[in-house]
Length: 368
Image (cartoon, rainbow, N blue to C red; front, side, top):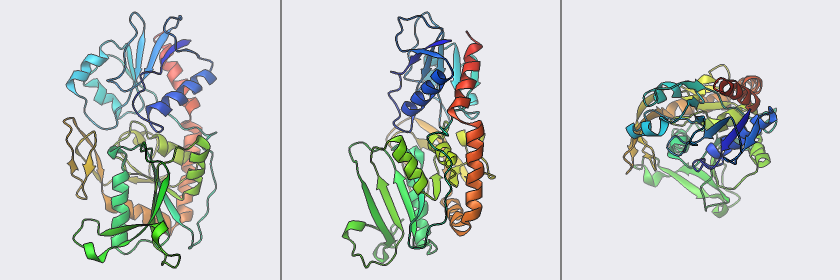
């Protein structure tokens, strides 16, 4: 089989989105013996587009397969026009199939994505000393949908409840362009702003004297990391958070699971296909509600504020359930690590990029 691999369609996403998925899938297909070309003038069997549905452009006179995803619910009516020239639609999770059936009358197949067991191998962790940070890691693109804001709300609410361990740390790794570097904040309750929904002080660690009492911390990291550095970051963490409003798959979640990290995630959309309470800590107390896609800002009440006009619905999680799971992981870390080990075993035996490529090849062979 020879594929024309349409990479120039992937002008959405970033290091944790379509760009990375495209690269990983291409490499896995090549490893399975599939020939790849990026030159449409060469002979090929199928044009494969891994892309946002509103970005792809079919190749005239050829078989075109669109591999796309939807993280939440609902598709604009005009998207129907984008699909009619596709010979086949492929989506990465069962949640996506009925969504696309509202706009596409043809065949739709489900092909899971994966995680690289070689790049993100299992790592045996241990409980840190009380003087060392117990790191809750969140990794994702700079989108409100990814749950970064929900993680901060939960962490600061835990602080105001007075039950948070002094060595707890929330580590936020994103790709906000132009910022670079990283900043560590020590976090404490600010008695002067009790009417503020958070009522919390974020004090840069660099301005605090070394004699400052132990306080929980929040790290904002915008550095560009290599795969090796990202793996080191996963290894440095003790638990992983992904309280997102929806995932087409959940790439960083499967990477974290592959390393054996105890994980907390919104149990809706993509992760439902491969994760459950036996291998982690799913967030099940959520409501599926409307929000605006771009530049959405969520208040402490879960309501969205935005200027955009394209509404979808996603899983708006209960911050208290995040706190309960973080507390359970901290209090009984040996049990949490056992769930992490089982998660790693499941990902590495059922959901690698090799599995994904083989499933995709089987699907494409059906239309050759």
